[in-house]
Image 1 (cartoon, rainbow, N blue to C red):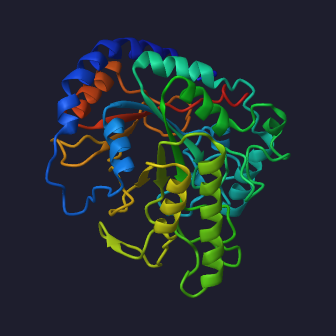
Image 2 (cartoon, helix red, strand yellow):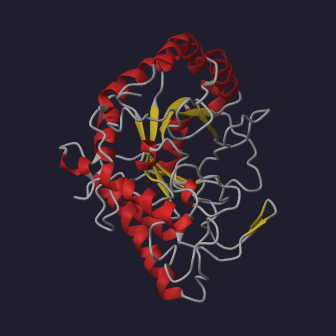
Amino acid sequence: MKAKLSMYYTIMIRKLLPCLFILGCSQAALAQNEHKMSDTYQLPKDSLVRQKLARWQDQKFGLFMHWGTYSQWGVAESWTICPDDWVTRTGPYSDDYFTYKKAYENLQTTFNPVNFNPEKWVKAAKAAGMNYVVFTTKHHDGFSMFDTKQTDYKITDPKTPFSKNPRSNVTKEIFNAFRKDNFMIGAYFSKPDWHNENYWWPYFPPKDHNVNYDPQRYPERWQKFKDFTYNQIEELMTGYGKIDILWLDGGWVRPSVTKDNDPQHYNQDIDMARIAKMSRSYQPGLIMVDRTVTGEFENYTTPEQEVPDKPLSYPWETCMTIGKYWSYVPDDEFKPSRQLVQTLIKIVSRGGNLLLNIAPDRMATGI
């Protein structure tokens, strides 16, 4: 993005403008319609949450950004350090998992996004008709893009070159810049943390994307991870201004269930009720998106890379990439602008929102 959105995107947003004005008006009534909720969706009991949810449904179009140390290598966000057997690793460290993971985590020492300028991103997003933003404050790899006090694996740590920059707390800078232009603010946060010793305990090798020990067998260790997660989210809820959406990823971190033929072997309950109560005490009306985990903490659903074939009876958002990848990957193949416009039309006409992911590239990382 070179601290701005790509030229391709600039062309695309000019084409979107007329559609957005029309759709914003024609779908207002649809968003207000009451439908019989599905068996799994639970309408929030809190009136402030319902009010904010109704406002969010009117936004229609948002910007999603995956950005972290992985952007330097141009690899899929976080997943190359996951030992799932479908993961592909390339490059000089790829022959040995532990060598690769060490080199990946060492990217912290070279992360220096000297061209960081969120105001340019705001300008381009506003021109596109976008009305809300969701930023990755922490992905599964555990690298925090905010000034957390819970770990030194963060952008503001002295080991990270960019920590010397006055705008090093990029989450705060991004939220402040978009908030000044009246965007709704969403904080993406990964529930799993593959860097944290209480999620991937070094005593055992990681086996897949899940916790690598049985939380019920080692409850004190799991409690430490729950507290770590709680404390990081509390930091985001108290030190970053008004937050409208807490967008929680990593749906396998949940009470033990079997879902979609994917048995979860361990109970990874992080006490969402406690997190939600705390979060809303600081951010009244906060929309909780405990995505793919049905129940009271999934205030809207988030089909990924797909559009429902008909209107849904509950609030929803399609999260979709502008190319093939969520993070910056060299030579990514962007979707044609016509296809993106048609996708937006389909989504809004069916009562949903489009959260379009556009990842900052290696120029934004100063490489």
